Image (cartoon, rainbow, N blue to C red; front, side, top):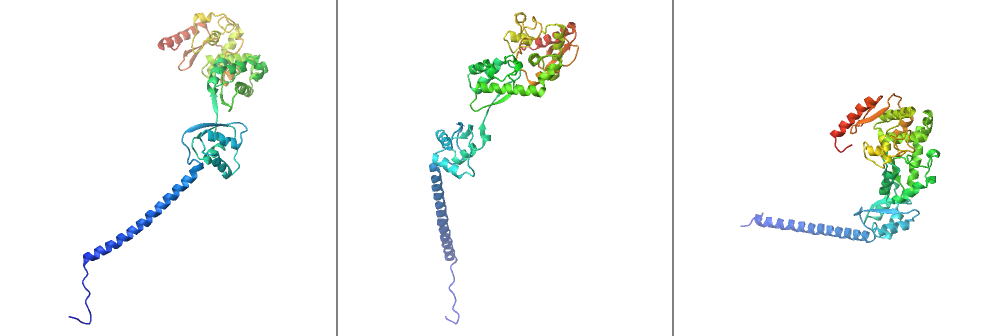
Length: 371
């Protein structure tokens, strides 16, 4: 039956669904191909770029730590050769490019630097251009070491043979000792922490010590203060070396210094175990044996009156200060009664001193093997 308006045939919902699904899927696939292809191209471009960059240069901050030494007067080209040999950089071309692209003309100081193997030339140049990155060797010499003991420490820290230090010490005219040193380095090799040169020499290190000694004595007005207490600076330094072993605190050192001068004034032997140990070439002991105290030596202050002929070690600033600014007391005796706490007892009579010695002996009985 027909009329003026014809009726649309009824749509099948199932056909409509599949039609829309196929259209959406086609769009998604097209985008996926386009999108995936883009990432493929990006990935290939990036890979090609990295390959190009790494042809002549390593990328990144490196792999393994390596110490590189730049000698005095080395040219930039020579530094590049050193880096290439150490596998820090991949090619001289990369290093020259890094130098050319640097914001300012790079200055590389002589010294030892901590770098890494297989690092970018630009990163290597950045490290080398900063003097703060120079690796320094430092050696610490503690107070109270003899010259012979210091020699062993210096040899270990610098890898220089101990014989070189011994030879340099014998050449006292070049050490930089003060005029009143009597040509003897014992006592004048100041204990401190020293920065060692890139290519150290034994004489150069020892001269650092004597320069520091002079600086400290000038700061303390050591010779002037020694004169004030009517002592030569050499005598005062010898006293300071005894204080370094006998005193535990700055105040105790000053009291013991006063006792030493009191005993000298009375003509009494000092009876310092520290000097007896030096006479017997013995160390690391709190007391001495009968045999050691019987040894014939000008350093055995149980037998010989007066000060030892030279300092017995290299004292620090606190002991030197105490030696020229002694405490004024009537004490004539001292003894450490508790070595772990550093407690020292003082006495004016031998009777009281013996009581203090008994306390020390009790401590030794309670601490086997420490005396």
